[in-house]
Length: 203
Image 1: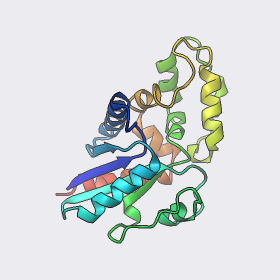
Image 2: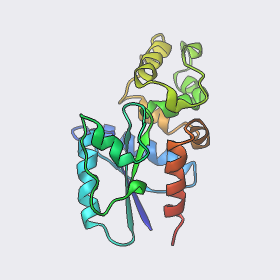
Image 3: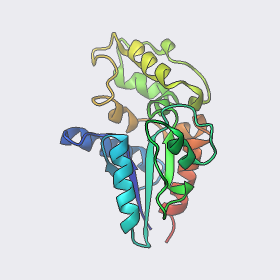
């Protein structure tokens, strides 16, 4: 089966950023023995639109998956209810899509980094302040605002500069250990990998 992941990230006007996004996600999933095709989409609305278009035209051997930040705590069991209830999204589930097709990085992609903090330190090296980062075992419980404020504080004295969503994020993503992410995100990352393993390894 051909598995396609439509990801929130990259830039529609910046080819280099789009390439870094695609490479970062590909490297991350390859470490878990998975080889889905990554489609970087820029903003989350564009990711949803492109995903919906693909779903309408997908072949029987295609499995498209939409992967976006949850942007906050996920309190609803059905992922489509979460994005439908968000005032900023109000997305409607495509007719041919199920819950298996929508997945979240909770509460943002940066939460995955907190699962493997040694890799962040290895990326920034001198000047990095590891004690600033929360040590919560469940990364899904870290508020989105804390993810960014702590990363900026931890990196403000680094030669590479403060944490940057575009310049640094996808390089770090390609470095971190997916096994650690699964442990630290026991609901949403675990669910994502369970679906990917079933689909990528099917005939």
